[in-house]
Amino acid sequence: MMLSERIAYFYQAASISFAISLMLNLQPVIVLSLYLMIFTTIYALLASRGLKNISANLFTSSIIVNPNPSKAGDEVMIRATVTSTRKGVPAIIRLDLEGLETVKGAKTWSGLLDDGEASLDLVVRSIDPGIKFAGPLKIAVMDPLGVIVKELEIHPRVPVFIMEADRLPSHPSTYSSSIHPLIGLSRNQLIGIDHEYRISQPQESEAPAKIIDWRKTAQRDDARIYVKLYDRLMKGDLAFGIGSGLEIILPNGLKASSEIVQGILAATLPHLDEGYRIWLIRWSEGGEPSTLLVEKSRVFDIPEIPSIKSLIHITRLIDEKESSFLKKLSSQGIMVKLILIDLGADLLEISREEWVESTADLEMRRLLEKVKSLDIPYALTSLENFSECLRRILAYRRAI
Image 1 (cartoon, helix red, strand yellow):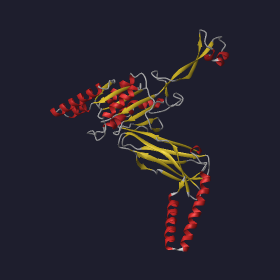
Image 2: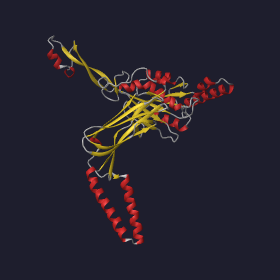
Image 3: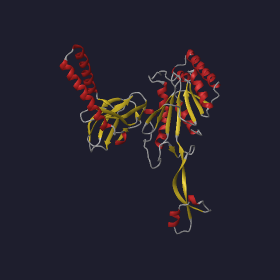
Image 4: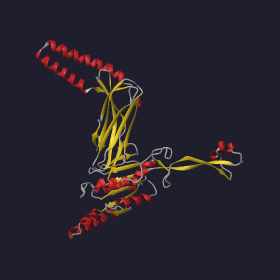
């Protein structure tokens, strides 16, 4: 909790006035300034007691993005709503945006939270492809006079997937909780953690009592014993590393890393629809990777490397520290698969001059020499063929 901006300025002015009047021995001003400071302090203490029990649990919120994913440059509609179990609460609601330009609408709402819902309706867009963010959604609750403010985060960030037109998936993006009941679980046969009941079928041989469907067996008159069949629910986590050397600007004006993120999204959006979680581990020049956990409807910044079984790392192996980082992950039992991006091959698509061919040859040799010292499985591909290479690796993976 803190003083509102207006009251904070007022309190500061009263304090300065008191100090100056004390030096100049201006008795009326000293008394007035002191009175205002004492009154504000006492009221702030009393008002803070009324806001003490207000928490994020009192509010129900949602952020809806449509369409998602969308084409770069197209308009995207965002609607954020908030309802409160406590009525008549004066509040200011703010939706933060990252990487998105506001075309229409306001990012803030102020007023009393009564029976209806407070909503923010915006139209945004981005000309740069990648993962942008709507949120977090924050609410500032105030006392009736607006002296004390308590700020709460009531909804995490939501991913907004911006892609070039030729990268957009051809099928609609939908999510069904009946087919995939839990975020992070999937029916993909290559991965697994738990079971989900599917159907009961007759059993010819003797079955353990714990799998018998007693109710259905009792209801049927065919004297057969029915057992419960289960689908295997799998742990659906995909982990990708975005390594060094990918911040280079391409002839189309985009960074190579942006093209990599688009390729990852094109390959994994169907998996997100199924309930998968996507881990994006981005290498930084300082040697401290940052981790982003992407789900279908929310995004989290993770302070450390997650506990994963496998990592698909896309890189050009420019940073020496990155090689040590990959060796460390491999020694910890994490199955690391490298995708080496050979920009020399993309350069040859632009020009076939002798110096270009020589540069492309040197780049390939450098990559091969670097990866040999790591003793890690790898695939070498151009940026143009990255999406197909990633699709093949995902199709033949065995554990994540």
